[in-house]
Length: 253
Image (cartoon, rainbow, N blue to C red):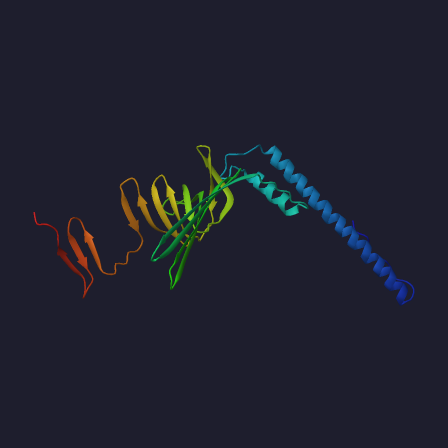
């Protein structure tokens, strides 16, 4: 029950003082009630999660709905965040230099392997430099390799697990463990290559645009753009010069 507004008496200053004191008391009571409501809600969620069992059978994360709800509630209402990550970092570097009368080529390759409890990450950094008397050419390349999985667009409800290769790729905390190996969910709308037990697949902006199936050794693509010629079989040539042309250029049998 909340306190009822006071009956105002006296002059204007006295009435303002009484109203101010009343509003201050109401604000304090409201803060206390909100805090009690949050504590009661957390306690209720904890009891429901404990009484609901461990629940490791639902979904790829291995968490029940009650556990997910409790995890989210604790994160939202937490006052302190503590995190400790132990990692082993291994750095391998290769330096090569070629010198001739035409110029100098310098190649530097760096590979960094980061192992944590949540998985293994490999980073690649390559720098190639060509220097002559009149010019200097520099090429750089970066890449990342990690275990990951993504929803299979051809089989709703199933997943493709493999090794994701990209220049820069983002994962979330959802995971699947298979044969004692953990795979992390690849976030949507990214560009990467994925090597799995079924072959290679290539994703552009989160869309599967090409794949090589190891089962029947077939290469599949969404779209093909041929600029000049294409050869099929042992000698059938398709040409695009002056219109579409087909002719046999192989050895007659």
